[in-house]
Image 1 (tube, helix red, strand yellow):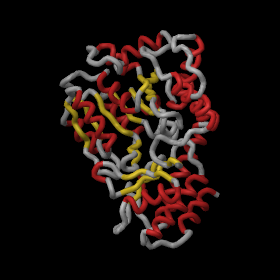
Image 2 (cartoon, rainbow, N blue to C red):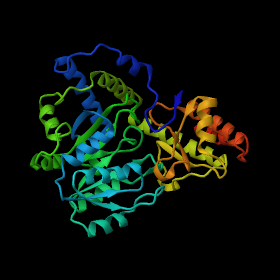
Image 3 (cartoon, rainbow, N blue to C red):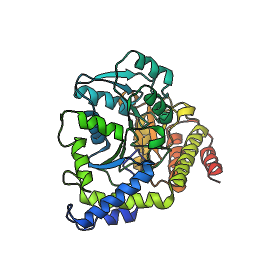
Image 4 (cartoon, helix red, strand yellow):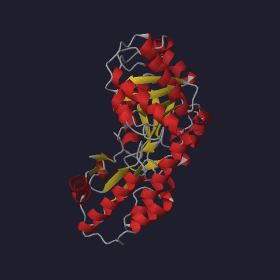
Length: 374
């Protein structure tokens, strides 16, 4: 089954082979060397001089750690919505007794600074959160502009870069991101189960002053371990083997080339789907470069598209989430996805659309994609 979903993604043979190595002691010089190699490569990929942490857990674990380690119960926090993962920050904040102030964003649209400033004006917030690339809607927000705004108002800036780091432009230090989060199984094309985050000095200052209200995900513990060049608790050694291999592949390709590849794949996917007489869900000016969300044509079901793609062509694509379930389908083009993968997906998509009675010009989508890749 070929995975063309917004993670997990297909893994290269060297990443798979690296995870088959026998586990080593996680408090040994040999493993310390692996961690240091991962930290160094992640700093280059995040484009930061800030500390890098590796957590054994999904990207959500790092979102949880960022909120629970910096914010006190009763404090206000501004959370930018507009999708399932942007709203997850609200759910995490509420779970820790914070007062979350949502910047409401229509699903499929990008956030505007005016909306953010309106919420800031009516709050006493100490921090602001953003899901940079919202995979549930296929939208990428302006993380750079929001960082500038956060600094203007003295807000701690927490950004979920889970599906953008390693696949789209993210410059942590230039954007002023205090805590930036990503996951191993997305654009970095590593095995699922690890979360990585960068932490600025401003964030550490807040963390150091905060009373301890969590344990495993308490970032102060990770800071103490980082000084000793280790992790506070037993990490997933085999997954970190895989992460090291995947990061080497990112560095080998080159970050700029990797971002360009993702953007080209996204453009080809969007334009080809338009040529197949389907409509994009996200607005053109905020369309994601790592996943494309497409409206299911009227009279066609989710199973007509995703079910047939899986059963007839061995390709797994994603469906809609929450209120978008049954209304959109999503094609992931992140990680190691190349032109041949997208061409196969588009050819298969044309076939299932025709079988479902959708009117389109045969071959038009593939031709558009081929022209973009020339």
